[in-house]
View 1 (cartoon, rainbow, N blue to C red):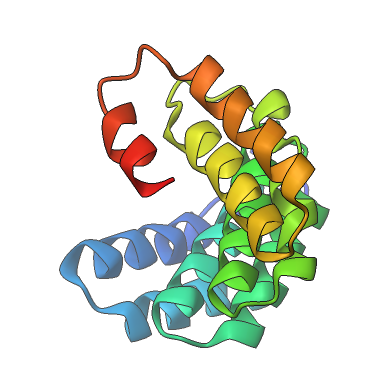
View 2 (spheres, rainbow, N blue to C red):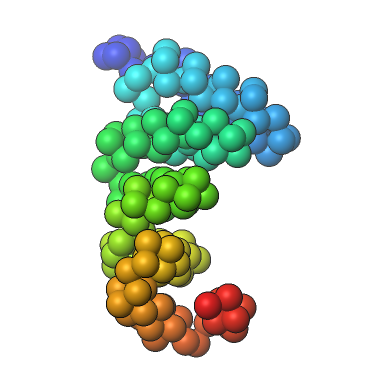
Length: 168
């Protein structure tokens, strides 16, 4: 087999799986190192978008906010996968929301629920709910009201909706 620029020794995948193992073991620092090494040594690795997404979440968990933002933005830039892009946007919105930067958060939540294809609807639900809450905090009451009504309409059969309704 001729190499043709492909990594036949699977070093790239090894770095990725090392990161996954470190995550499972709770060793965030080593997982970050493994993903950073992967991204630096193998810039054309086919899962770099997902690696950037994972890295963003790890930086977020480590409270390295600016690095988390850069990693999630890179995941959006690299990915052709709609779900990775939307998950990255969701977490960027959460990051900005937690920092009380509601003006930056709102574009990430706005209408994201219409673009999701994941079978897990939790991200859809939380995106729509956080969109309403962000609008509320920005005193955009009419839009917040419409968003919360849409939320209740879309998820009225959800068994966990009662918890969310109580929070509103």
